[in-house]
Length: 151
Image 1 (tube, rainbow, N blue to C red):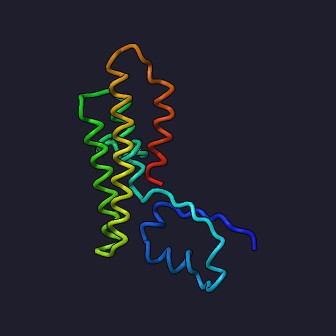
Image 2 (image 1 turned 90 degrees about the vertical axis):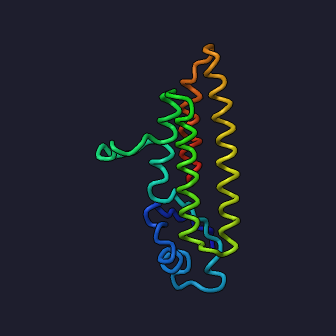
């Protein structure tokens, strides 16, 4: 049997128990459970926190991490946005894993990725502060990097 690739949307994955039963297991047993690749979108709402609110009706929401960084606003704005992303990811881990050992693994994974992202943004922020660097091209790459952070 050839491997299959299956995409699970962020809104769907929010109902983790249902996804496990209806998509991951879905009546399969033994070897049928394997040779499957799952691409999981960011949990619902995480992409908005990483980039910017996607709906015009979400104008009251704070700008996302990318929007905060790209706007080059007050120092710390993007750091606050990154902290909000980390808090939302940890809260989702708590909902999914409760007090199980897997939660610590998931929280450590989030902490590592948030730390790497913070270091990258700090470096870009320092470059931007010198005034001799245009960040147009790096910002496009940064947007893709941040979008992938939630996946």
